[in-house]
Length: 81
Image (cartoon, rainbow, N blue to C red):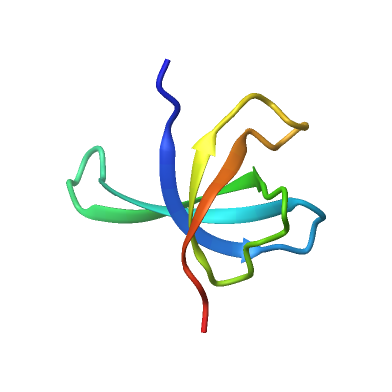
């Protein structure tokens, strides 16, 4: 089974080996059709504590690693300034 890969922005790296990634999606409203921006936060495993706040990262779906953590860091696409 193919694992999902998504791109988002790191909003927190305060935990050890864990980052919080905010992913923005744009979907039409179910009744009115207006495009709505929605953000979802995912906790992802960062083995080397590599990602910093503000970085754009690519994360991959994985097995459950803790109560909330079901994603793993694949790569840092763009570093924050």
